Image (cartoon, rainbow, N blue to C red; front, side):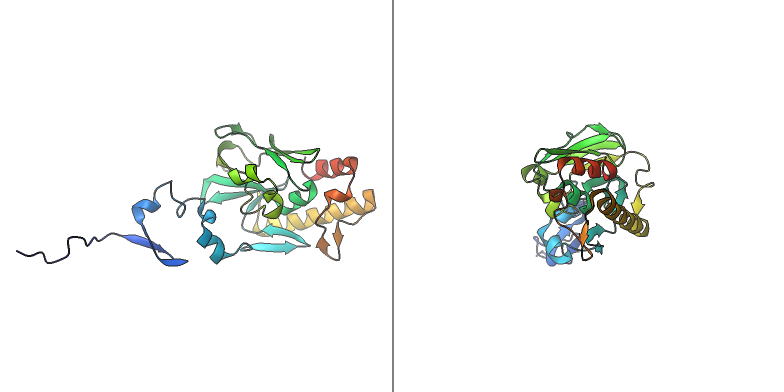
Length: 236
């Protein structure tokens, strides 16, 4: 008897990408940790970047940029849980850190598998002869290191919230519970900018902003002693 359907026809449950509807993704593939679509690395997809835009969720707070949906540590580090799973997150520095540190030309980051402790020095950022010791925003284990930062550390200045993530880590416990988020993060960020302005005007006789906009080269206006004092107060 002749077949009633083509033998090459296959029925399979799929999902599709709204940015590229003809891109059908089998559900079993989405469950794979190797793909981008269903992992915390989805932002690396060129289609995602094109459609969502680089400034999605970005706010301008007195000239500094803040990614409002991230969590923030008091030492100006952000934590972005992956795909709603708070057990894994990407870590980076905020725009405030990037402006204080200056142009980053080298990053010293812990290796994959290393355990780190909250508020303990975790990685180093170098700007010429200057070095900043940054702490870990949570307890956990390093899971991945961003190769783009190793290849071009200045990405931390150009795109600190997206392409400039530094490493991802497997978090231990309720790591994000004590961090600043959304409205609380916004108020904290604004208060930090006000504090920076006071330090500049009272201690250094300078302005950290110009006409309401943050200066792009804050570190370049400071000598080593002044820079060290500022970094110690806000990032140390």
